[in-house]
Every structure is written in C-alpha cells, then in structure tokens.
Image (tube, rainbow, N blue to C red; front, side):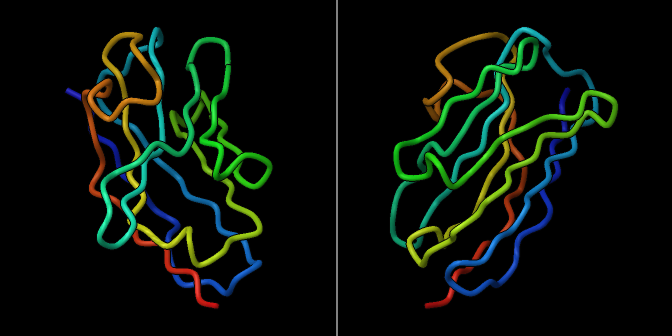
Length: 124
C-alpha cells in the first residue's frame, strides 16, 4: 500500500512559479517511476513529467520542457515539481503517481497509485 499526498497548488499570475510536492508513505518501489500528471478543465488527464527513482532519470512532456523540473528527496521520500514561466494553459488539477514496478513512464495506465490532486490556476 502506498499513499501519495500532493501539496503546493494555488493561484498564480502568468509568468510566475509554483513548486508542487508529493509526499509518499507506505511501501514504495525503487525500481519504477514516479510522475506528475495533470487534467485541464474539460480535457483528459495528461502526462507532465516523471523521474526514475533509482537513478534520477527524468522525462518531460514537450509542453513543459524548459519550464518544469522534476526532482526527488530520498531522505524525505518526496517528489517535487518546480514550475516556472507558468501560463494559463498550465491550469489543471495536478496529480502525483507512483509505479509498483518499472513500466512506461508517460502512460496513465502505467501507474498504480495516485494522490488526490492539487489545483493549479494560472491567471492571464
């Protein structure tokens, strides 16, 4: 059993920054990815970024490359998403997710555990 808790969302003006946190409790896999997904209003959930826990390999959606950075803190068992240069298109509920074993990092169906989500709203 793994529980994930996101925090750090809020309202920010275009061009601003936010840092999301995902604290994990329970048994987590050191052989899989942890990732961030988001669901904009009226759209399906989409991949944002992922990190391979054991070696810190990172992957990003094209829409956020150069603006978002995913990282981890092993001591705190926490994953972060630093979001810079935010624009209204980034408005969404952001979800943290974890794999029980290594699978495709960008697929919604590749993750086993999900947090409740945190709202990010970017004003124009």
